[in-house]
Length: 238
Image (cartoon, rainbow, N blue to C red; front, side, top):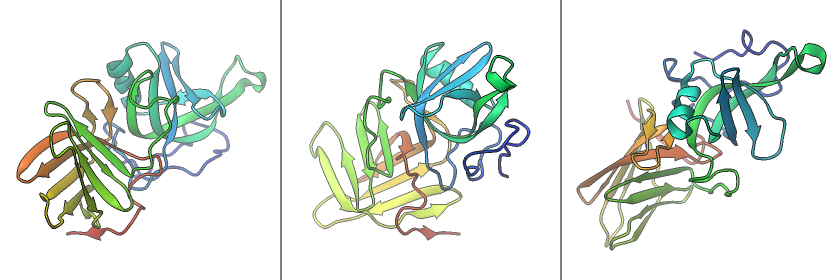
């Protein structure tokens, strides 16, 4: 069900609550329709702190499941981490602030956590893709946009592109079956479960499998900032 901000963020929420969190145990899976907020996260013994990339209000970070704190510890230890999160903004008691309250943000879903210095921190402009996936050894990447699905790798063919088909959706997973005359077929699937990059340690919200001309490649995926579910047609399968 929905994650309620009322017990943790008393006061008036300044944004609509995020969609339902699909994994109550971890809190790390992406929501079905989501807009992500970019910023840096730091945890100390006293709690968490959120600093948005756009220079907006900073505040306390409420992590009801502990999933974010665990992911940040794995990715960056006690240093700042870059994060793309769904947040409910409100306020919380703080004896050190004027009026005894301060801005606070409750985490309702996690899209991506990386070391602050790597892989698209606040200093790097976000891409226009809906989904980006990648894997290591062999290295590969897939980007899904409104109009296309693009496969990239160091070896030839280094880039293959298809017109984006409507994804098939089943039990939260999304599959793009890509075919075009004169080039290999690609079956690209993402599944909503936390995934950790085997080299950088970055944590993201989807696992990914790309099958190119019968060759299966595994990796991790994350959403563009506008989310994936509401962009373009899709076909629900039973």
